[in-house]
Length: 333
Ligand code: 13P
Ligand code: SF4
Image (cartoon, rainbow, N blue to C red):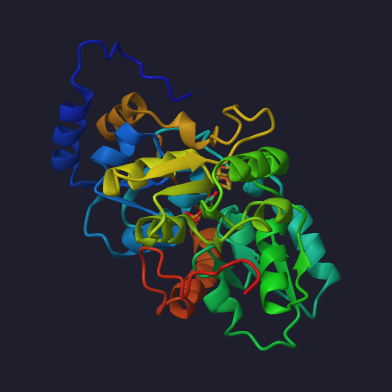
């Protein structure tokens, strides 16, 4: 579907991408889970919240989104006049797949007194059925603006929702979705690693299941994990999220050691996001050359989805980017 249709052999892809982005007046946005060579050429690398803010604010005519489809869709919803390209249209997300809009609509209909607080890792259709969107870096700020008696459905990530419930004493109804990447960390292997490196802080994304979160010294979004890793006095840290974020850590703090938390056999690639990995330099070059594959969203759907995204941007307005998610949360505090 997205295969380059001419041989790219002999092309200096990096130089060609630089030429095309100037010619097209394009900005290249990349998530921390992208391959290092993509992160290194991006105009901006960030978490889901920072990337949506960047997409909403850019003057560029083209947004080349190196991330997954729901992120590129968010960019199109917020910036409808821009051309938004995604190097590989198959770059989905297991959380989005777990939440088909018809089933979500039926679940909402069963709970008419609840509002829907929805993780950004969802389709435009599910966003359109929701009241407020959150990212992992804005979820706690937004939840804390809702009165304790407010009845809430949280989807599609049961682990992020469960962590918020435990942390803030909430009782949100959880949609049963999971991220296949964070689900794959092994508690046994993590405990072995901790025993080998006593005192090394464990940093975990809230998409991790509780048996991983329970061993974490810090729980937060990718940007928060990065910030904590760089500010920590520790020289060795264990990182329980998709391991490509370690590239930014090693660049900013080459004297420190960052170890990715292990999967079931202690040494598998199961914690790499297979969807993020679909984007490559070759596909980015072709996308900039052809301005395809392009995200298109029907206008009625876009406007409906934009409402819940706008509420997120308003309610998270005071959440400073680059992972300033408040005081680092030490498990148990
Ligand atoms: P962040 O918003 O923390 O970058 O998370 C995005 C994501 O998909 C994590 O799996
Ligand atoms: Fe989706 Fe998980 Fe990949 Fe993030 S890491 S994009 S939540 S599958």
